[in-house]
Length: 131
Image (cartoon, rainbow, N blue to C red; front, side):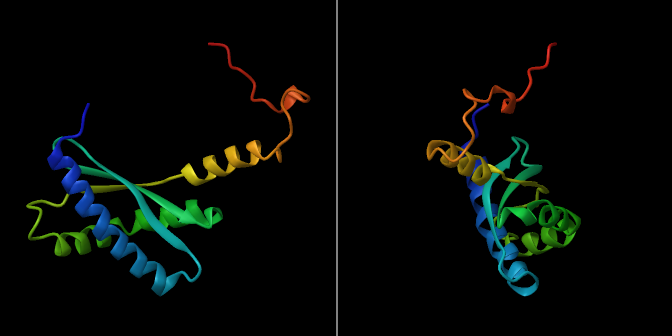
């Protein structure tokens, strides 16, 4: 279903403010880690916001996403304070790790010829599951 203009505007507001909140937290506690909010998708009833986090270096992604998820009430409270003049009700925040950068890196490696050739070695291909 197509996103409405209202959903897009709320997603933009949340994304901008979440970047500020998460970058501030990263500066205080995690040196050398970059956290960015790659996408925010708000449901049609404006009750839930799915937030996708892109984390560099990606080795730490799972641990950082778990940490952010455990601090969701604090983050939501901070976001409610920041958006009180723009939003009547703060949506629930659901955080997910965004692995798009890993996917792009794998494609880049394949295009540069750094991966093993699946034509020469078909055993590296994932096995098909029969339904």
